Length: 82
Image (cartoon, rainbow, N blue to C red; front, top):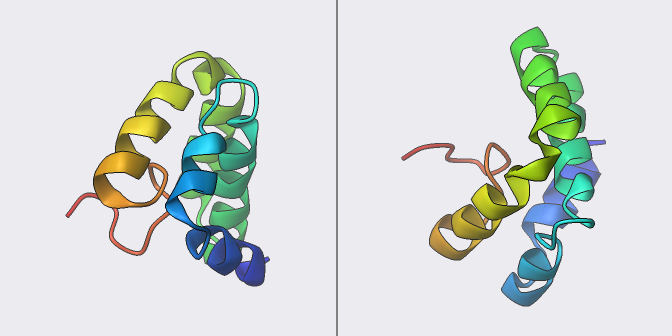
Protein backbone atom coordinates (compact mmCIF):
# COMPACT_ATOMS: atom_id res chain seq x y z
CA UNK A 1 0.00 0.00 0.00
CA UNK A 2 2.86 2.34 0.74
CA UNK A 3 4.16 1.72 -2.79
CA UNK A 4 0.84 2.96 -4.16
CA UNK A 5 1.17 6.23 -2.27
CA UNK A 6 4.77 6.70 -3.41
CA UNK A 7 3.87 6.02 -7.02
CA UNK A 8 0.93 8.47 -6.89
CA UNK A 9 3.23 11.11 -5.40
CA UNK A 10 5.73 10.47 -8.22
CA UNK A 11 3.25 11.03 -11.06
CA UNK A 12 3.84 13.92 -13.46
CA UNK A 13 1.88 17.09 -12.75
CA UNK A 14 -0.37 16.70 -15.80
CA UNK A 15 -1.55 13.27 -14.64
CA UNK A 16 -2.19 14.60 -11.15
CA UNK A 17 -4.33 17.36 -12.65
CA UNK A 18 -6.24 14.81 -14.76
CA UNK A 19 -6.93 12.78 -11.62
CA UNK A 20 -8.64 15.90 -10.19
CA UNK A 21 -11.48 15.70 -12.73
CA UNK A 22 -14.72 15.40 -10.72
CA UNK A 23 -15.60 11.77 -11.50
CA UNK A 24 -12.00 10.53 -11.41
CA UNK A 25 -11.19 12.32 -8.14
CA UNK A 26 -12.51 9.31 -6.24
CA UNK A 27 -9.02 7.87 -6.78
CA UNK A 28 -7.50 10.51 -4.51
CA UNK A 29 -10.24 9.89 -1.94
CA UNK A 30 -9.38 6.19 -1.87
CA UNK A 31 -5.69 7.06 -1.56
CA UNK A 32 -6.50 9.09 1.55
CA UNK A 33 -8.13 6.04 3.14
CA UNK A 34 -5.13 3.92 2.16
CA UNK A 35 -2.81 6.47 3.74
CA UNK A 36 -4.80 6.23 6.97
CA UNK A 37 -4.44 2.45 6.95
CA UNK A 38 -0.70 2.71 6.23
CA UNK A 39 -0.21 5.22 9.05
CA UNK A 40 -2.47 3.11 11.31
CA UNK A 41 -4.24 6.29 12.32
CA UNK A 42 -8.00 6.33 12.87
CA UNK A 43 -8.24 10.08 12.28
CA UNK A 44 -6.71 9.74 8.79
CA UNK A 45 -9.09 6.86 7.99
CA UNK A 46 -12.12 8.91 9.09
CA UNK A 47 -10.94 11.94 7.09
CA UNK A 48 -10.44 9.70 4.07
CA UNK A 49 -13.90 8.19 4.37
CA UNK A 50 -15.43 11.65 4.77
CA UNK A 51 -13.78 12.76 1.54
CA UNK A 52 -15.11 9.71 -0.32
CA UNK A 53 -18.83 10.00 0.38
CA UNK A 54 -20.00 13.49 1.37
CA UNK A 55 -16.87 15.28 0.23
CA UNK A 56 -16.74 13.84 -3.28
CA UNK A 57 -18.79 16.74 -4.61
CA UNK A 58 -16.33 19.48 -3.66
CA UNK A 59 -13.04 17.66 -3.09
CA UNK A 60 -12.15 17.73 -6.79
CA UNK A 61 -11.90 21.52 -6.64
CA UNK A 62 -9.78 21.46 -3.47
CA UNK A 63 -7.58 18.74 -4.93
CA UNK A 64 -7.11 20.69 -8.16
CA UNK A 65 -6.09 23.82 -6.28
CA UNK A 66 -3.80 21.83 -3.99
CA UNK A 67 -2.14 19.95 -6.88
CA UNK A 68 -1.44 23.16 -8.75
CA UNK A 69 -0.22 24.91 -5.60
CA UNK A 70 1.70 22.21 -3.71
CA UNK A 71 2.19 19.44 -6.28
CA UNK A 72 0.11 16.81 -4.45
CA UNK A 73 -3.52 16.27 -3.53
CA UNK A 74 -4.90 17.53 -0.25
CA UNK A 75 -3.70 15.41 2.72
CA UNK A 76 -1.56 13.15 0.53
CA UNK A 77 1.91 14.70 0.39
CA UNK A 78 4.83 14.52 2.77
CA UNK A 79 4.20 18.07 3.88
CA UNK A 80 0.52 18.56 4.59
CA UNK A 81 -0.05 22.26 5.28
CA UNK A 82 3.41 23.82 5.27
